[in-house]
Length: 328
Image 1 (cartoon, rainbow, N blue to C red):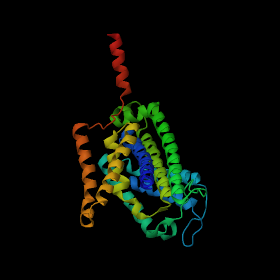
Image 2 (image 1 turned 180 degrees about the horizontal axis):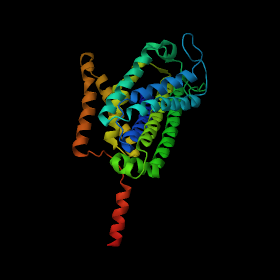
Image 3 (image 1 turned 180 degrees about the vertical axis):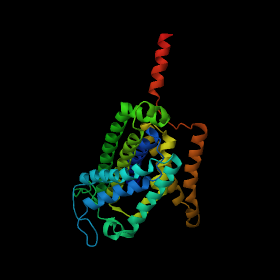
Image 4 (image 1 turned 90 degrees about the horizontal axis):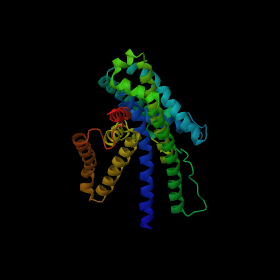
């Protein structure tokens, strides 16, 4: 029966890789395409998670909810709520320079986290929201352990479908005129303005699109865990870990964002398994090895491959090189 436990853990890890890949894709739209330093990913993650939880859970005394809607309605609502929250934030904060934008976005994420932790009517405060329905969770014809594994596999399939759809849409935008315009704004804002581009509006678009994907990632997380609490909005795992994934995988490359999510989460999870096997007095201290390994890996990538494992494809330069070679 031990292999079933390992298979269940592999499914668990793959689901989280898919969820974090969505977050990394959202950050790639903001940073990789538009050059927006958003350090408040946890805030939009929380908005999406709690919005979907409120829309899809049954009635509970003492808080807003009880709409009992289908899960896909909750996921759409999570994206819309994250986008609506991102709009006023972007209108104000995107006027700042990149370093000021990072500080402002961190502050906004902390405000959202504190509101979530203290607002009992909307989010049930520190107790969070439980009883969130998970799609394809019931397999009554199977034994308990087999039914749990089947539920994991079914949810993984849903996450993969959502991730593929998001990847194809983002990749299409990357190759479209919109993507080329965003990279032009990122690389030379003055030249883009001289060409008549509305830089502020286009940056706001990228900020809203990326935040909507982050909200969807939060909704997927909440429905997988069947609950959401303020502890899940830890900036370490909901913001900075996503940044490490994107930097390691390759900023500006959607496949790199997904690869970075897989590599970082596998190291993060496997190091937890290794430290849990140590004696109790050493296991607590050894938890810091996880941070050390992630930090060391990031330093090595920045030192020897600063463009990431999969660099941003420079299609325009390649076409220019080919045409020059043909003329020669």
